[in-house]
Structures are given as structure tokens and as C-alpha cells.
Image (tube, rainbow, N blue to C red; front, side, top):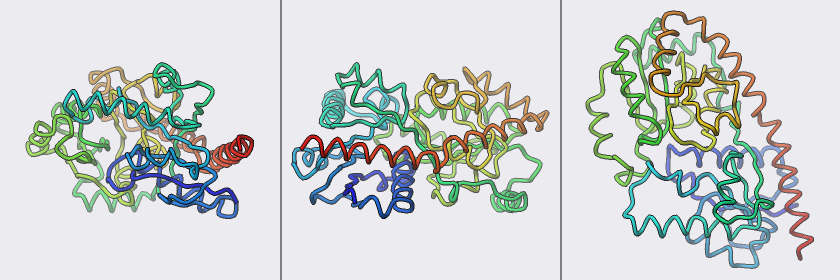
Length: 344
């Protein structure tokens, strides 16, 4: 068996896509490859491979130990992608950004969740040959399309009638997620229900914390902020909505979009370069809030427009399935093990 140690604190903070991606991978490996991989979590014993999911200082120090075997780094963010997410003093921010890149440079192999990150990492001084793209995925056991009756029952539970159009989004409440546009769309469309599931995962250091806290308290009647929702309950929101909207200005490979796809929800996104690289053709693109608003109003008049997007979501789910990604991860870890053996 190949001994793999996973180093991560991603599941300690609720409402983060990094944590969701980590949990999905661990579950996949344990369910499908328990006879091939001996998986340990945050264990400092001897390993063949050490896979770092988060950049905790104690993990960084462990990279200097020979017990770690081949070091694999999972890149879910770059310094520039943290802008608009957390607010840090300039001096500390510069030190932290240098630390992030230093952590990545300590790795023998890097895995990115979006191919657009490869050139950016190379620009930061990393070796292109050591960077591999493996997309995220979600479990169809946890995120799946429910029956019409189940959808209706959940709508009843949250107090929204079946004839109301629901636009749903989720993620941390922060500027980067485009929460201001989502909020304004709710104000401009009082006859449509808008729901945002997510909160302040970084607490008061969230960029714009006070302003967003005030916005939540003064939200219009047709706008609901649920706070951080357990992943087991998120499936109900994806199913109950008519349209999933993520107006983010910057993303890597958002788990929320894959979760929406997996539940058969039509998807509307700000048309970012990174989406064009990974999910082009599966969603309705919009260059700005105006185009988002136009599409929402169009859908409000004719719900049948969404039928084609439901089909696209199902196609996306097939491509980013567990079956497909399990083969990729199996080959990746076995290849890394072979390289580790050759290097000894």
C-alpha cells in the first residue's frame, strides 16, 4: 500500500470551498482505494507521499523532515486571489504573501484546480514541469436532484410559494464573491426571491465586514441571508431554486457551481476567464450586473428558458463525476509514488 498523509485544517472553518474539496477527496479515496492507499490525516510519521491541502505554519515546518516523502501541494489560492477576501495590515500582508509562495516552492509537485493558475505560478517562480491540473468534483450521493415533491416541501419549510422564482447563491459574504451585485439585483427585482447561503468564515478580518453586516441587517424583504449552511442542507437550497447565481469577480474552481450542477440547477455566472477554461458551455454567461438582470427578468417571464440549462448542468455533472476523477487521482498518486521511489 502507498502511505499517504493528508495535511489539512480546511475542515475546521465552515463555509469554505477548500474544505468541501478536501472532504470530497478524502471520502473518494477511502471509499474506492482503501486497499491501495493507506490514508493518514495530519500524522507526522513516515509517509511515501505528503499532500498539503492548507498552508499552516506547522505544516510548512514539517516539509523539512525526510519522513515526509514526496511533498505535494494543493493550490486553492494565490496571493492576488486573497484581495477582497481578507483585510490585513500592509506589512503583514506582504509577509504573508511571500510565505504563501515560499510554501508552494517547498513542494516537489503542485496540483492546481484551475489551468489558468499554471502561468501565474510560473510567474511567481515555480517550475512549470512540476505543476499539474486536476479539477474539483462533488459527490452525487450528497448533491443530487430531488423529486418535485421534496422540492415543494422545502420551499414550504422556508416560507416561499411554488410560483415564486428563486435565485440562489452561496459562498462567503465578501466583495470578491460579488455579493454587492447580488444584493442590488434583489433590490431591483422585488417580485423575485433571492437567497444567499454563507457568512463570515474569516470573522471580523473579512474585508468590508462592518458594511456587509449592516447590509444583512437591512436586507429587503425578498432577500434572505441564511448564514453558513451545513453541506448536508445545502442540497435542499440548490434543488429549491430556479436559478443558481454566483456573481464572483475572482474564483478558482468554485465547489458551489459543481454542487449546483450536480443538483440539476441552471447556472448563471459572471463570465470569467477561468470559467471559460473549465466549464464553458455549461452555464449562462453575463459580463456584468446589467446582463445578469436581463437574464433573470427574461427567465421570470418564461421559465421554459431554464430547461436547456438544466440539461447542461447534468452534462457538466457527468464530466466532473467521481468515476472520472477517481481514475485521475489514482493515476496521479501511483505516478508520484513511482517518482518518489526513483529519487531514493
